[in-house]
Image 1 (cartoon, helix red, strand yellow):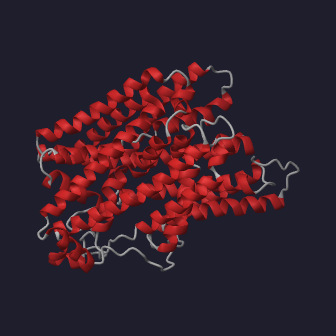
Image 2 (cartoon, rainbow, N blue to C red; image 1 turned 45 degrees about the vertical axis):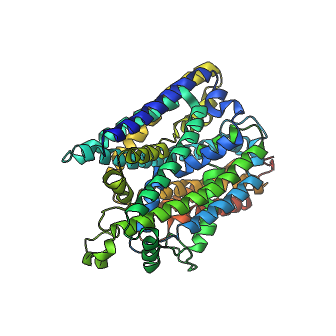
Image 3 (cartoon, rainbow, N blue to C red; image 1 turned 180 degrees about the vertical axis):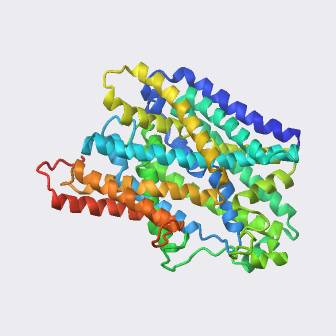
Length: 511
């Protein structure tokens, strides 16, 4: 990398910071700060959803999935579930969001069950989102550290990564603090254009640098089964299968896109349910196309580096061999950043790194602040003015940003793929929350205590399943695509049993 690349990278970081500050004059009420006065067009919401869903984890980790030994396009089976889940959300959940002036999705639970259920769901969201986005911040910092290392060989990697985490965290805090959700959405529109352009540029450079070009890459990919898509085995321990992808991916999307404030907040920025549904369904088509593209980049990287030509490749991924499955790299998340910083021409390298930052800085700070203010604070501070709440929201944004910086530093030691780690965390808590929304929608007899029993039982079971999968406790190994399904079904089942054991005379429904 050269000086021009640094100019592009830091020019981008400065630009989005200034963009957020420019929006500061529009934030006069919490309605402006959290839902953009409900005036954002559907196409901007669609692009924002794609940018939010993509993140650096997709940009960096998904090519590593296809690059790894035994890796292929089977990740797409999960994306088919993503698309099915969008259809269900459009039919069941989105009409509910526009029956009142909501600022968070969890206010629906408050109306249906009361504050305790609402606060439990909100608390799970706050915990999960801070962990998942702290991991995303870490992954982005690793890329920035690689850029720095290319200019300063021999620098201490740990120190550089921590400094990068802090720098990126500050940028994210500043533009979210000043601009609110509307600034976040419009920054994401710009980000989508930048990172898709960067990905296309990287693919073109890869093809140009592979001996034999595209035909060789396709031949190598076919030889090593890189383009395999379907695995119809019903294996609950395997991450990517057709049934796990279609069913588990559907429930995961119903939870992340249907009951998670981070994405539902985007729908609330539109004026009517039809606009929200159009945005969500349109984003599904774009997401499918981009995942195909990122997996294809992974296949191109495999042909470019040619790890299969080394004798060590036969031992890659074998337990006890000491040779990682992404040989010659220690982790799948390192493959694409290495190519970008070491092999792309000046200017384009800076563009792609800026694209990675674009995917990373889709801030969840405003969504978490909205949840904390509306669902966790306002029930105990009913007489506080909107102006005071707006001021508190800004400072809470800063605090949440600092928490995500701390989480990123704390997860530096993990050797797991950031994609699997982040999606595991999301699936772990989103299942119980999805379950309680389904209870509120379809179980007319269920009341607050029934819903609480279901959520608590489900959360406990999901923590146990995660511990068992990682070998900390005895139990079945179940891969994360099934977590949202198991969590939501457990919530439904326990809540139903609770209604039989302790029936309620009050049969109000969520309407």
